[in-house]
Amino acid sequence: MILEVQEVHSYYGKSHIVQGISIAVDEGELVTLLGRNGAGKTTTLKTIVGVVPPRQGNILFMGNNVAGWPPYRIATLGVCLVPEGRGIFKLLSVEENLKMAARKDSPWQLTDIYAMFPRLKERRKNSGAQLSGGEQQMLAIGRALTTNPKLLLLDEPVEGLSPVLVSEIVAQLKRIKGSGMPIILVEQNLQVCTQLADRHYIIEQGLIVYEATNSDFLADHEVKNRYLGVNVRQ
Ligand SMILES: Nc1ncnc2c1ncn2[C@@H]1O[C@H](COP(=O)(O)OP(=O)(O)OP(=O)(O)O)[C@@H](O)[C@H]1O
Ligand SMILES: [Mg+2]
Image 1 (spheres, helix red, strand yellow):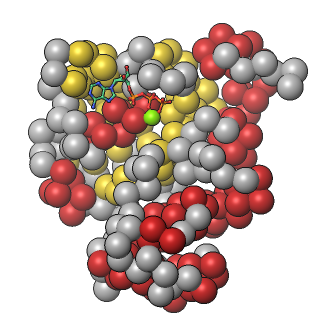
Image 2 (cartoon, helix red, strand yellow):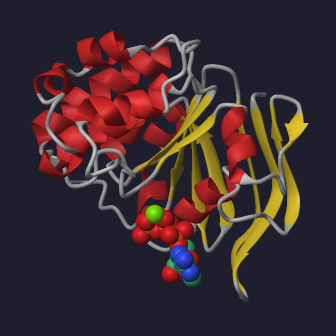
């Protein structure tokens, strides 16, 4: 296992949000973290990267128990969160955004990112603020790749995007996964999740309540109604 989260608890002040979560990600595996709004998906990702420090439990990443480590140290090991708001620098150009955290040892260099997302190349001189939502998402993913990540955490990467852009980003996520990158994906779009994932976890009120392989999840029509409030007939 590349990552093992073992009975982790985390809080915002006195609010107990993550209430004993255990999840694991194997080499080259893409797992999703599904659940309703407010279930604790984003907080779980923030806990893994150390932005919200866990108060209990272990977070084993490539043999290190990183629970309690500061975020910069966890990032140095290659755990990279692409956050919900995308976290790009609005005042910097596309190219500056891509260069600022880039590492020479990354298999993804500037030219690779431009090949992956030609739109970013066209817009390389534009500032982050001038990008559409889809372009911002491409930039956030591209920038993450230049840091030579060993585990990618993606928080709602296609939220609010048009179907064309969703397919474009899904196609690139497939390529990234195909390169062997382990990924945790938080996403509301179930079609996107089932196209990409090896396994799924469902989180409810800060606890994992369901775990299944992608094929078992697809065959289980009940689960989507029970935990996700999705009408499967749609
Ligand atoms: N900075 C914060 N301070 C206090 N409470 C917070 C903070 N961020 C989130 N929460 C609360 O923690 C709970 C879990 O939030 P979280 O953002 O992890 O949910 P989520 O599953 O990612 O939801 P969504 O699908 O809406 O993104 C919610 O009740 C939320 O209101
Ligand atoms: Mg969230």
